[in-house]
Amino acid sequence: MKIICIGRNYADHAKELNNPVPKNPMIFMKPDTAILRKRRPFYYPEFSKNIHYEAEVVLKICKNGKHVEEKFAHKYYNEISLGLDMTARDVQSEQKAKGHPWEIAKAFDSSAVIGEFLPMEGYDAKNIGFHLTKNGETVQTGNTNDLIFSFDYLIAYISKYFKLHIGDLIYTGTPAGVGPVAIGDRLEGFLGDQHLLSCEIR
Image (cartoon, rainbow, N blue to C red; front, top):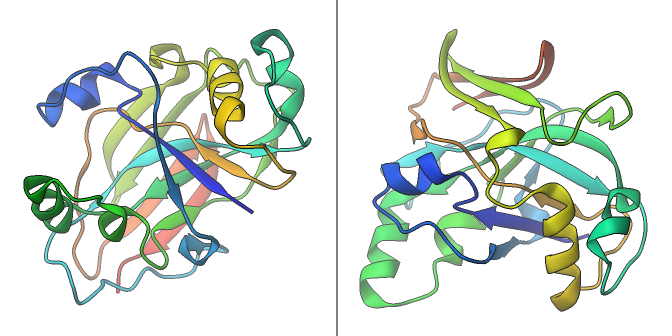
């Protein structure tokens, strides 16, 4: 199973981090050891003092595919969820300053929190609202109609470089509002009015 993540796929998020809006999807990967399922707690890693949450709509691939045409891309995912791309922002900044890759800031163990999956049927891929709360207060709100690169475009683009396998996950990008977590915080994610994700920081 691959965890494929898309960076800067909402213009407002790119702007809040003073990053340029990309002309092509920015792709990075996480190993399967990054997955944190079943509402298990996230343990604050010892190597960082600035862990940030990033709430994202997640697609589950249901069909193997390579060089998928965009017009057929909708056939390659049939389940959807909400996930958190947990990021060691201080480590990421250090790596960027050195011109080094920053996998250690994004792909560490338990950095891909994932909620429960729902059938894609009944959802309009271009108009899915979602939000994240921290300790009961809404901190991120997004809608897939604000994506720079749509789900289907992402499937087509990614599959040019990586063969898609059943069970692969695609984290499709985060809107503005990312921020730090502290031990004792509780993060809860909603797709529309469906409560799909709950994660305590320990």
